[in-house]
Image (cartoon, rainbow, N blue to C red; front, side, top):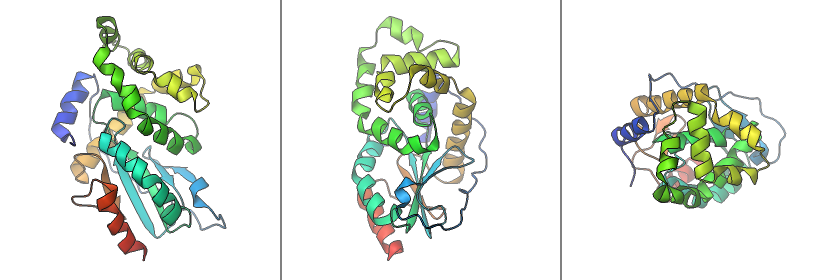
Length: 240
């Protein structure tokens, strides 16, 4: 079941994360049409720390707010990735933007790892983190007192590294070709974490996103749409 924003803020506060003042979301940059035949290879990082896959000038723009600890988001990614790639993104009919949505402290760690490295890495990182979600969340139920104490470290980078280590996220990201030193630098990026917290607050207050996954099409929030089953007909109707 989706967590409400209130529940999210309580859990975030418990993890030492403050959701702060909202800010205006900028639209993704618009690029001129090119001769690219497969838009699945085109990734653009936006000014608001999100990523657009596909033709940024496509006539349809789908936004998905995803939480890396949300089981429904993992299910959506598993069901939607191939159809979106084949039917919408690849041929340039529509672009797909993922905006991380922070529900709790674990989302902060996973988001910093997903955004580590060049833009071309983001969607692969996201797919791996969501595909292996159960695997890396499972150790939470077996934390020792010493591990719990490490998670309360006052230094942001120390806390993020401890969580990543205890959940096996270093080993997971090394499959993507990352070195530990690079992951450590990304996990210490508190300014990025603070900005994404602001984007989360904006999504909740201004766009009506109070759970995940949440969707926008061409800037308009979709009502009662939380699954691929409910999203697909709405996309099909606009892509005809």
